[in-house]
Length: 394
Image: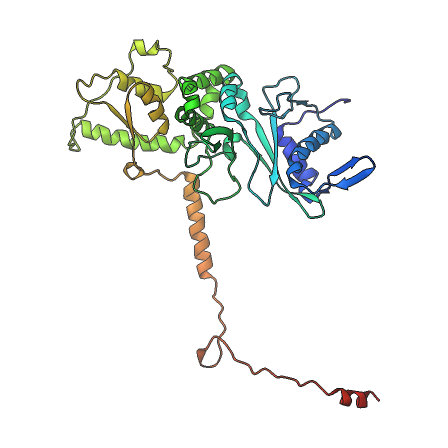
């Protein structure tokens, strides 16, 4: 290509949607062999065709890119041929009249691969929701650009939605991210997504060994590639609200320790992890959970049983590895979240909208004696005799 241009995933998405108006275009898939030319009407082939079409679109628009030779792992396309760790694009497509039928990746292989290539976690997924008519006309009904955690969720059996058949986990499967229906919400952050992978690794017998130290390896690999600042940026999006809730909990604990609030239990304070803990290969000083685990692990409870109480499912996994018991706190015992400024603004707008709606006049129609309906007599016209018509016509 002469003087190729560089586009990011966001720019590719914007051009398709707003410049090429992809949602107004129509297409057909034709197959020619031995002098026979047909229009393909099989919907299950459209997904692979769209990926090849997008590569053709990039060439037509003189966009520089490389294709990934490893077709089993994301991304499909490297939008920066000089650096295969940035501007990663995965192409997915599904029949918009059905649920998403594509896979994210093989579960076990993916869990291993992201340890070696943490930048894979920031692959952008461009997703085509297509429709094919009975005549084989293909149209794009919807187009999305998503992070992987924005299209994934949990399931009944596992912390991560996977293809599970005959007691074997195969592929990571997507959620219906465009719908509000369903029992499991989408993951809200990269941190949630990785925690779900770790929990599934731990609970699945074939990957239980792989789960040992996986979280620390993942954190180390991510920090080595991006740096600590980027690692913190992708922590839980609700961290500010959690911090405020933790502040209230600390205040209450402080009042209990000082005797302001009476307690039925004796309260002792664990010390921070020792110097020996900092040298432990499984201790990561930048992970808050490790401070909690090692503090409990080193605490001398005598003959009493040590139990960690938390509402973080990730704590349970790590505690098990150190022989500690963990109990998840029921939601009813948690300090409620305070509303964010954005939520307060939304509630205020909703209240104002309700006031405007209630202020609008309610039009009603009534008839004599206040009834809301009117009965009318139906006039029935009899059909004229054909003889009469013939006389008139003559």
